[in-house]
Image (cartoon, rainbow, N blue to C red; front, side, top):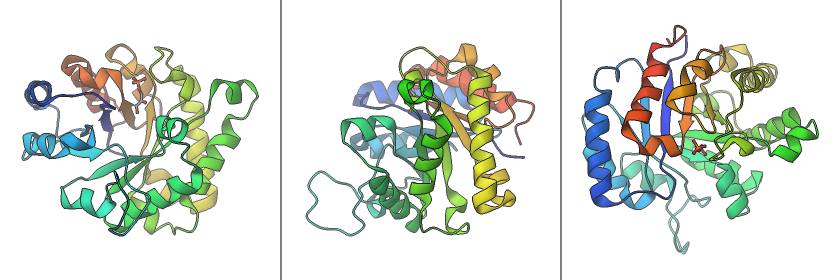
Length: 259
Ligand code: 13P
């Protein structure tokens, strides 16, 4: 059985004082359930140290929203390397979020470099994949998802990939209030597990954590997380409201299939 994971992606939100309040509330509210679900908070890079400090000793992890494509220190203004994130105690980092792909023209090749850099320093990458509404309407969901995953995994062995987490985030469901129905999400998650089984073996595909993201909230989390192949969530807007995020974590923790 796979242990549920809920990750909060704060995107470009937060201030020193707000962070103190939000993390304080979360630590208190999450304390009864934090043993039964892995919980991750991904603040903007500039607040990683602050949030990491506030979470220290609580069992809740701090993660990054992105990482440099460059592996080595050097003249890369504005970038932060995987090694630097590891140095700051970061345990997970998102790669390939659709907002990075669309706002920074990040290609699959760039996503693959970032994923590799994270794995090399022992940070668990959360590889985000997802289709646009046009691609869904054109019947391309499986092709788009498979292409994104295979490109990001290219050249890496099953052993090297053992720390990877996947997040299916249909672009049309992000920040729109339009959640994929539990059945729609489950169908894609099942497809992902199936394609991973054929490419990397069933042992790998059965152990890999696959999150759903896109307008997850307290009101729909139970239904989504009760689907057999949905192992938790990647949460945007609702991660900024402690009661919402806690309720989502509780839904994952109490899901009957949570290992
Ligand atoms: P929302 O939960 O705000 O739709 O965002 C999802 C997301 O993009 C998380 O990475």
